[in-house]
Amino acid sequence: MTVLARRTRPLVTLVATTAVGAALVAAGPPSAQAAARPSDSGATGSSGSTARGTGGAVSSVDANASRIGRDVLRRGGNAADAAVAMASALGVSEPYSAGLGGGGYFVYYDARSRKVSTIDGRETAPVGITPDAFVDPSTGKPYSFTPELVSSGVAVGVPGTLATWQSALDRFGTRSLARTLAPSIELARDGFVVDDTFRSQTLDNKTRFAAFPDTARLFLPGGDAPKVGTRFRNPDLARTLTRIARQGTDAFYRGPLAAEIADVVQHPRKDPASTLPAPAGSMTSRDLATYKVRQQAATKIRYRGLTVHGMAPSSSGGTTVGEALNIVENHRLRGGSGTARSLHLYLEASARAFADRGAYVGDPAFVKVPTTTLSSQRFADSRDCTIDPTTAAPKPVSPGSLDGTGCATAKADEKPDTENVSTTHLSVVDRWGNAASYTLTIEQTGGSAMTVPGRGFLLNNELTDFTAAYDPNDPNRIAPGKRPRSSMSPTIVTENGKVAYVVGSPGGATIITTVLQILLNRIDLGMSLPEAVAAPRASQRNTATTPAEPAFIAAYEQALAPYGQKLVPSGDQFTSAAEIGAAAAIEVGPRGRLTAVAEPTRRGGGSAMVVRPGR
Ligand code: GLU
Image (tube, rainbow, N blue to C red; front, top):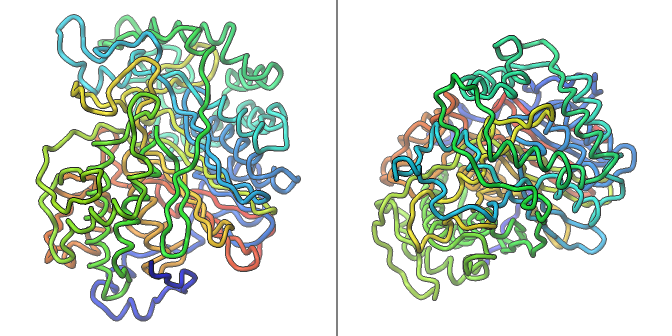
């Protein structure tokens, strides 16, 4: 495959001389100084959406979490220690996106062995779940997705987050769980300053939260979302984390807390006056006691001389990002006057990869998932030959044939995309060159809206990621003990065996396209990493039209029209935000120079920090 220089500087002048390029610049990357959410403890220097320097780097959506991670690195902890400390902090300050009640995927590069490993900490369906769990017994019809299913006990999966933290520390870390949790216990006890994002996420969930008095007591004190500028404390969560720090993971997976979690799932504690149906789930203490993370090989593909390591199924992230990259690798992508053609190819490749994801990816413990084939160049070539470089195919396109020989695609039936947009991602690189890429979630913003009384955290509604349709051939059908297919795509890119990029994002199924687009922007389109993250996004997931951010539509609609690409404004059913994703990324440059990059504006702006700031 062609090896293109990837350390190119952005070709700003060249780009600006073309119509498309001018739009790119106009819509383009905000300054690296753009506002980030404030850290409460007066972190010094380097807080913002871009930080450059050495000695270790962190990036996340939240300044408290990034400060805590940076401090772990500064005091000699490694990337795994910092990642767990940051994740726990995000459970405090981003409680609607992550926390003890959820799950996620951890990808780790060990500098000594130069090996990438993964932890699958995905939530799991209870063993008592039945294939018709999402059907209302009183009507015989499927529960409506919103509001019935999303705020229910039946959608809660057995949480994997704490087990992931312990596994990450055991396998890669240097510190105890107790020491790693200490800063987030302090953060929960002392509180953080409420910003616009926290308030608006609370307001978006107000009706759901109000239906569960335990949740309302915590997140709607006095009946309203906490005001911007006030301090939000969560002493219940501080106590829960302290208990876990003292007693270990059994304090969560066994004993009283496990029994309480099971009880809430089986008997959702809703306000009797609420009309929310909140159907019950079947989770038992035994489901919690038997929860285990999975260790498995990362997905791996070669792309223009780099190696891209991703998350294997039960997430579809690694295979789908990998397949799309393998497809576009057959083409020369470039910015400037080549931008429209490059974006057209990106959108077409993404549609094919999503068709194959839908047809073939589920939990490998339950269905045969052709991970190797989906990650192979031969298969990608058979998909690429269905792409016309000048004209968009009618979508949805049909999936490819796994023998990799076909070169035909037909229009397929549209499938509803019911994944929600929430979640959070963190990226870390330490002074030794170890790296962690960790995406964690409680599914949609606010999860199931059910908290465990007096424990300070929300339970996920991850089982809504199972396909709602009752097609027996769907690899992502509900089954007892099964993990729903995810889109989370924590990614580590290596070059000559060393880390070059660490990337990830929230955003439901758009996670895949966000990671893909950032990599293409950086590797192929001549953008710097801060520009690649800030650039406007579009997400083609095998649907007739492509949802795109307003800035993407403004920049590229005209240029993409001759290709037959149709853009529509992005946005989901729960919030008014048209944003796609909230990425956190790091680049390791020559002589270990680090560029940590968070979002300049999406989700209120993220926070990137380095241990020793400097060019
Ligand atoms: N449940 C989604 C997944 O696993 C993540 C949720 C989100 O990012 O909104 O793919």
